[in-house]
Length: 112
Image (cartoon, rainbow, N blue to C red; front, side, top):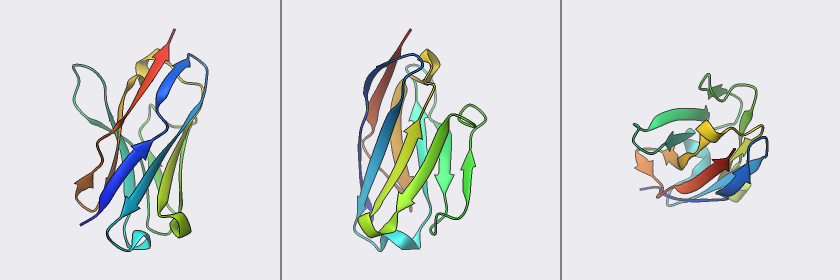
């Protein structure tokens, strides 16, 4: 089974940027697609972005389009989420997902 560990969360002012990382282990990293989800306080977990096993195909939630970018480096078993122009409504715990497994999440807090 895949194990996932997120990092890179923190406190940032509105308009700022953060880059999240998700390190994977346990299976051949390049064999599966990966995604980022988030869960804000009092809300359900929602899709943010996904990337195919090769990195050639990406998809985004409407809220992330034009501001976030997902990428992966298979040689490092890592997927990234570059977040720009952050808004207070982006505040959430961000989770990495792959092959039926979830990481424990990393907290992103955007202050106004």
